[in-house]
Length: 220
View (cartoon, one colour):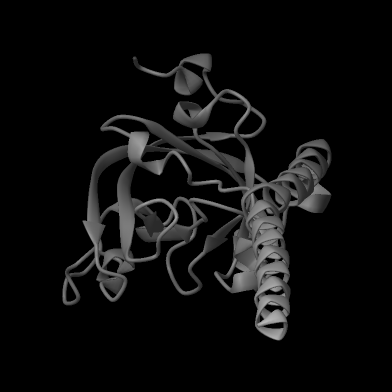
């Protein structure tokens, strides 16, 4: 009986230790990855803003891992700014927003498709479900600012990759518009589905001219 009690006690200690380790892992996933990714994104954006001609790669020259634009979404907050990287690999999405390789580049006819985490690793698209019709998604490249405005949103299965086609969900259609699509996991803390937001190019401005202050205003 004493041996059984000792075994039970040992098992209890092991379970407590495993529980503590699990809590630390969850804390690392939900908090520390945000801290690290946010700091990295802030450093990259600051560098791109300070030296756009040197530190922002031309979209046409971007290769996987290159930061070629800054994404600003006023609805997410006045300070929201994240680098847009070419590619959507796991390591790239740990640093910021990823551009689906092969989709249109900012300002082009077709669909500029991008992905971002909704939780962990800076969670750039955490508030994606708050976006409404008319909200601005600003894409800042080396030479220009592109102002896209949200047109609609949808929730789809992870297998419905047609949302990032040149004409979303229309495989045979030839693109005639300049579109943008954002994708993220849905619901939060799950990868069961995808939350998708579509937008259309509304205006573009040269970096030299700047953008009107009204573009960054949020309609309540």
